[in-house]
Length: 166
Image (cartoon, rainbow, N blue to C red; front, side, top):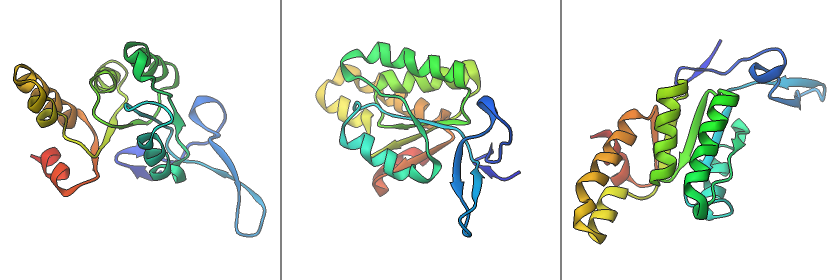
């Protein structure tokens, strides 16, 4: 069995543990394509550039997508938790650092043992601190917890990769 960040990528059988995709081999015959079950969402919201970017990045893994509604952040976070419980994916990949999505993936890890990756092009702590000094410490702590709890970080800039590592 191979692995991706400690996640099995070879599942056989039907049901939630297997039969991910069908495909064809080099000779044109059908073959079962297996790999990790990945759920993905973008905290910016469904239909945006972040969604397109993360789906393109993960396209070879054929992730399931959880539409995230920015106007219903609480409801979207609950949907992430519901899907974590019902589907028990190998991992989430969250594009963005939005608090509702971040709390959902952290709780999914703690409650259902579903690890997660964070993909981002922005540092939430410094951004929020520049808007409101009262929120500086809570958002810097949130960002630290999010990165520390994640299985990995996909940074769109060298600056962010450094923030996630330190």
